[in-house]
Image (cartoon, rainbow, N blue to C red; front, side, top):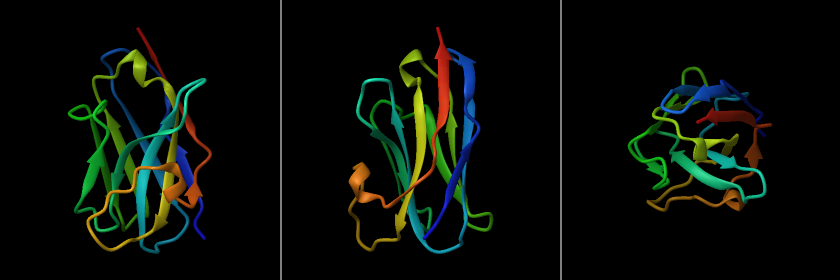
Length: 125
């Protein structure tokens, strides 16, 4: 099992930037992702990254503004969020699952077994 701890959320003005971090408790091979959930809405994928870091996926709503990355030496992934919009306001969750082979992209919450507690991001307009 792996425990995930997010940090870096907060309040920012529209157009600003934040960087989220997610530290994993182990160095095992995990594909990881960021999801977000706004009040009254379903949890949806923001970005995913494979264990190797070679492949990443972005939701259309954040392409060109957000960047997912990872540092396996620190067991940590990051989400750099630039040009933030009020619509980005949500609780952001880090998720992980054992590294998978193949080229499929995993974007559904049910496809991840491990979750962090979430960190609030609020963008004021």
